[in-house]
Amino acid sequence: MSENNQHLVQSGLFDSTPWSAVLAAGNSQHASNRSSLEALCSIYWPPLHAYVRRKVADVHLAQDLTQSFFARLLKGSSLRLADPARGRFRTFLIQAFEWHLANEFRERNALKRGGAVQTFPLDFSSSGHEPMDDSSLSAEQAFERDWAVTLLSQTMQRLKSEHADADRITQFETLKVFLTGEGPAGGYASICSELNLSEPAARMAVSRLRSRYRELLKDEIQKTVASSQDVDDEIQHLFRALNPARTR
Image 1 (cartoon, rainbow, N blue to C red):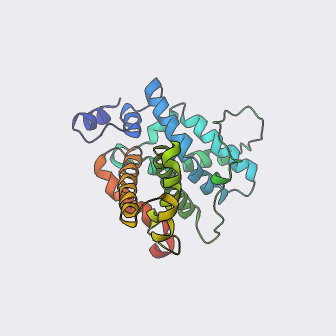
Image 2 (image 1 turned 60 degrees about the horizontal axis):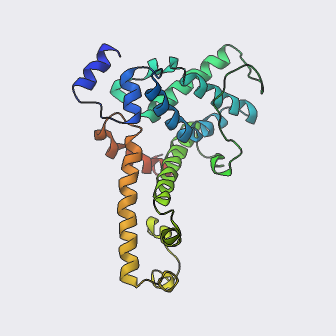
Image 3 (image 1 turned 180 degrees about the vertical axis):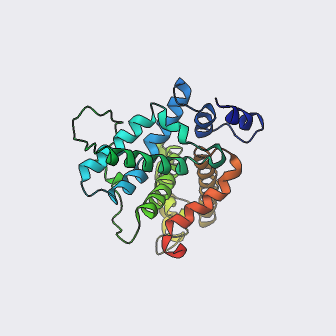
């Protein structure tokens, strides 16, 4: 651990989160740090894929560049680029990826599928991980927007997993449409008979879901920042990224 990072840990500026553990250590070689970083990479690779797809016409090359970046990141060398004063995983990833792309193109290292370059396994075939088609967004805006979508999706998946038993999953799937403030045309009354709930009970169930969703969202964000003090700012950034037209 660097002297600067050691000071930050001792002063309490780093909280105990997966990303802060990696950042404070200064490398990912330790097994627990590598595991934390690998878990984050497994979730948050789609925004970088969306970013490089805006810059590289060849789909296969874009995939190779994304995979090779994460493979090299997990070896630990790129972590020296992490700035403890700007400890967001999102910020670090895009800066390190820019460095990776510049290095690849500068060396004219045209990657070929099946080559010797180390890769990190990513499922590009999943429809849920296909970059959204919006040519009006810049590469940077696509990254930020897809980051927000990925984070919200991960949060919803965690909420769903808490209701996975047979008695609760049907209620969750029916009520989750109200989490965004929208719902079926008939509102709560239209789903009460289906769930065998009174309207007040349905509203209370949705209120509990919203409360738990907010808790999980903050927890998910805290995994990607160095300090809990950054969570509220990151939430604001998240929702600005979902509406890039408003920030132009």
